[in-house]
Image 1: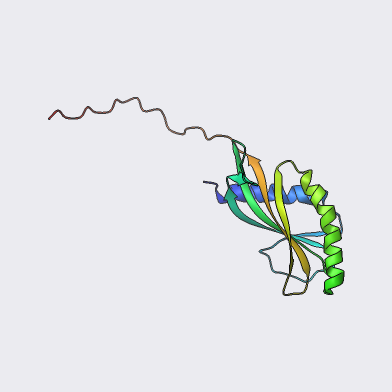
Image 2: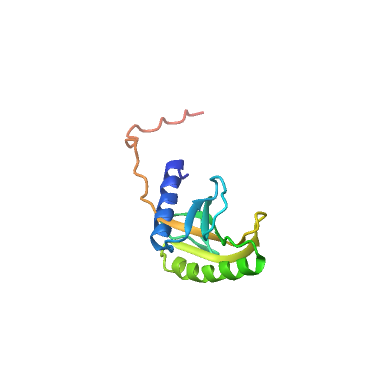
Length: 150
């Protein structure tokens, strides 16, 4: 089972990878933090489940897959302007995600938040390679006792 510190490290890897490739004028925010109204495009991330499949296929051996929800929000409250802006920004985000070798996504779903923003929500899987654990105990050199004869 993945420990919380391992999941924190994986989230840190994802945030660092996204920060390096997103436009400077975008904000990248943890979805679990307090929501604030923004005047710029925001990409929210939220860590979800640990998964064993990507788009219907198994994850590679010696990898862990962590699902994240990415929500891309445009600040415009007008539905027409918001839809146009977030769709335009999504078309910049998708090629960036496709170039990330340890990230897989399948569908971008359009939604409208109660605060008025038009958004796209993507379920992505971030892969991370892990080393097989090494045994921490000495091998058992004492033979098992023989069962008593009846």
